Image (cartoon, rainbow, N blue to C red; front, side):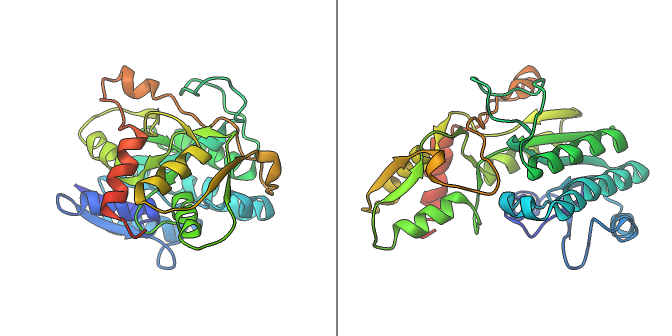
Length: 282
């Protein structure tokens, strides 16, 4: 297939390129060459390549930065997504886009499924939800994948940050232990995308790894796996003030994948172990 990847130089985009380059003809659309917020530039770049599939991974993902620059967040995540979706529909391309757990407020006592009502508490979450809505309006032939707690080769990610800190001497590391989620590798997401390319499904899917952990458990597991001797202590969200509130519950149930007959996503511990075996010096 001819596949165009927006945000192809980002952490997820790079993994998508690795997973697809051997079997497909790819084009990366990313800054500074392609600006999805400029409708004419976005359409021209997509039209010139004539993709059969567009993987829309471009996004403003700095959660705290979005709070201080809401116009930029909505310009990229909402307007940019609308431009990509409109171009995909006009050119007859299938669109697979990526969203986030931040569309939810994080107060539910169970994992969120695809039919739960979003209620974002941050500018980032609101802008990504607006992007989802734009995609639904402008491009019926779409798949939206909500992902969470993502890490992959090169970063940036929480995993890169915590292992970087753990390798330097200092006081005990303190990591939040009252936020729950599904640590997810870019590899697991890319492998799902490969399967989706052969399946004529459409709509919204949750696509995080199986199993759940707190940030503290995620960090402690990673540090132990690579053999770093560093003390790590649990703390509460209240002890770390951030401009954007973090959801206490980021767990995503993969209900629609299950109902469509897809195999379960990999367990987060297995994926983390695989990743750290391949990248021990992260």
